[in-house]
Amino acid sequence: MSRKFFFYGSATSNLPYTQDFITFYGISDATIIAAFNEWERIATEGSLINYATPASNRILARWQFAGGTDVLHGGNFLAPGTFTILWGGGVTHNSNGITGNGSSGFGDTQLIPSAHLSLNSAGVSYYCRTNSATTTYEAGCLHTDGSSRFEVITRSAGNAIFPLLNTTSTGAIANANSNKRISIQRTGVNTTTSYRDAVSIGVVPHPSTLLPNRACYVLARNVGVAQLFTAKNLASFEINKGLTAAEETIANNAEVAYQTLMGRNV
Amino acid sequence: MRSVILTEEQAKEMTGILFAENSRFNPVQDADDNWTISEIEVTNCVNEDYFWLKKLPLQKHEPKIEKTDLE
Image (tube, rainbow over all chains, first blue to last red; front, side, top):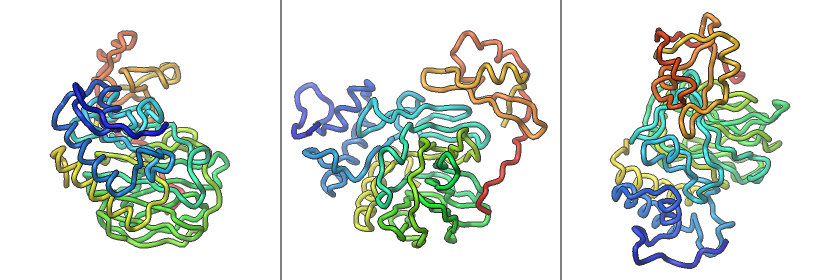
C-alpha cells in the first residue's frame, strides 16, 4: 500500500504511521503521540521508512512498547494488525515497556525470518533499560533442525554479546554494557555488526547459512518452546533489514528522541 | 519472584490459555520440577475460569537452571 498522504482535521497526528497506529489502538495520550511523531519524523527524514514505497522500509517491524498494557505493547507500529506480539508467561507491562520475569515471560512476534527476511540483510534492535550480565536471550529463534540461529544475548555472564543472525556460528564479542539501544545487523555473507548507542561494539565474520524457520521471540529464545528467559526491561523492539552504520546512527537518533520524550531514556 | 504450584495435568491444560486480553499462561517447572505459574500471571488473570489460581498460596520461586548451548 502506497502512503503519500498526510492526515489533518480531527486527527491527533499528521504523520501516517503514527495516525494509523493510534487510530487502530485508540491511543489519545498526548505524550505518547508526540513521541511517536518524533520517532516517525526522524526515521522518515533519514529514509529508514518511505511513505511512497513501504516495501523499501529499512525497518520491517517495530514495537514501541507504549501505553502500559499487553494489548498496546503487542502492536507493530509500522503495520498494526500484523506481527502482533502474543505474550506468554510472566511479563510486566508498564510505562517503562516490557520486563521479563526471567523464568516464563516472553513474546511471540509471529515474524519468521525465513518467510520475511533476506539471508544477508537482517537485524534485530531494542532499547534496553537494564544493564546486567546474565546469559539469557533478549530475542531469538532456532531453526527447527537446530542448524541455524537468529538470536542475541546482549551481555552474558561472561560479559559478551552473541550476535548470531542466520548462521551456525556461535562466536561472541566482549561487551560489558547491555543498556541503551542495542542493535545487531547482518549486512553481508561474513559481516554482522553489533552496536550500542550507535557505536560499533565489533564485527563478527560468521558466515550466513540459513534463515531460521521459527518465529522470533522477544525476552526469550524460541526452540519450539520459549527458553532462557531474560529479566531485562525493553522499551522498544525492531526487526530490520541489515542497517548500515549510517542507518544505525539515524535509527539511534530516532530511538533516543523517542525514549527521551517518553521519559524513559537511560 | 513468587509462583503457585500446579499439578502436571493443570499445567498442560492451561498452557496457551488466555489469562488476559493478549497474554497466555506459560507454566514452567521450578528447580524441584514442580509445575508453576508466576505471580504476574496470577495477579493479572482476568479469565474467570482461572480465578481459583488466586486462592492458591504464593511461594518463593526457585527457577530451574537452563544452560545455553553457546558457552
